[in-house]
Amino acid sequence: MASNRLGVGVLGAHAWANKAHLPGFKSCERMDLVAICDVVKDRADALAQKFGIRKVYTDPRQLIADPEVQMVDVCTPTDTHLELSLAVIAAGKHVLCEKPIARSAADAYRLHEATQAKGLRSKTGFTFRYSPALRQIRAWIEDGTIGEIFHIHGFEQNSQFLDPYFPLRQVPAGADFAKLSPQSIVGYGSHLVDLMRWMGGEFGAVSASMKSYVPERMVRGYEGMQKILADDGTVGIVEFASGAQGVLQTSIVAVGNYPGVEIRVYGSKAAAIGRLVTERGDAETLRFARADAVEFEPVTLPANHFPPGTSVKTMWAELYYQNLARHWADEILDGGRPEATFLDGARSQEIVDACVASHFERRWISLPNYD
Ligand SMILES: NC(=O)c1ccc[n+]([C@@H]2O[C@H](COP(=O)([O-])OP(=O)(O)OC[C@H]3O[C@@H](n4cnc5c(N)ncnc54)[C@H](O)[C@@H]3O)[C@@H](O)[C@H]2O)c1
Image (cartoon, rainbow, N blue to C red; front, side, top):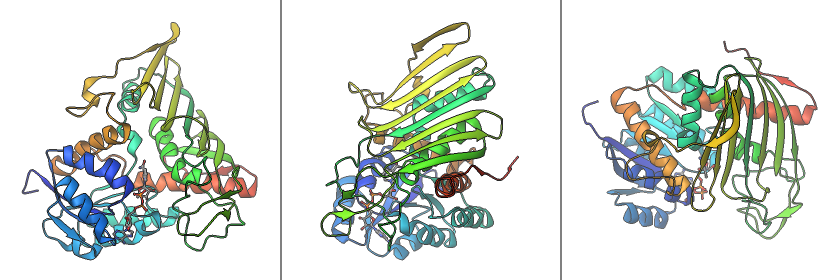
């Protein structure tokens, strides 16, 4: 690539772009924030001003065609991800898309194959892969410190939608409110199964159960309270292809602070617990125990997992997206190891789909053998 800075265009100028993507990109010396686009012009104008972005569009096709834009970030509502990402790929540009990258695994695989056909880089917005604590656990798995993995416990649970007056988002257009619709397993579960797969390898089979707890709630785009059966919590058990066992819980109604991710990995030599819950101003903690010293001890998070100028006191969304941005820029500009690609997004979607099918069919669902 000619330039040593990556020209970035952002689609979607609302909550998550403001909180995570734009602070992350802005902090990255190797990224040049060229353009932002929102179908609501005021939103794009406001964030362009806040983050010093040169160009504003209201038509995503114009941003995608801008010759200064080399990588497009799709940070729009879930139902638009597939179409917008396909348009980015068709224009021959690298693409980052928020999770879930599509509404079905088949569509997610289409996206992956489209990037492969054009030789483009892709990244799924798997924010928590960029947690310093979870990157350290992954390093301990890779260098053999943990040993053979026996169990992985994964949680993503917080109280984001406990209040029925806080509108539910990302409800698919035309959804039948009388039929239980996957929510926590999609919004949170796509991250969680990705993290568990990143740590423990491919899933062999899952058995899961979804449950609605809040009978009436506000839903974005609808007037007044709605009777809606939405999956507020999903619990699942996992057989990994390696033989390891896993348990998972996603919940949007579990009291506790954000983002509420916890991963526990238990191996033949050691165990580690990464807890991504903001407490007393710290974004996360890491604890470690050895087979011969079984008391879990706190671990100081290694400096190499933090972007310059950040610490465990940095707000979690900004910390993780700053980390994602620098790794993503290096990946594209230096040809580094691909990470959290659309293939990972598709595998995650396939596992989420299997959890949903398991609930409705009341049975274990096997995943394809990818070894
Ligand atoms: N990775 C994470 O941890 C995480 C956290 C929060 C949200 N998300 C995901 O990020 C995405 C955005 O979330 P949000 O809360 O900001 O959503 P949002 O609905 O609040 O904002 C999306 C913005 O996109 C704009 N938009 C819609 N269609 C567009 C189009 N075709 N072209 C350009 N702009 C368009 C809307 O006007 C809106 O301003 C969602 O997919 C969500 O699931 C991920």
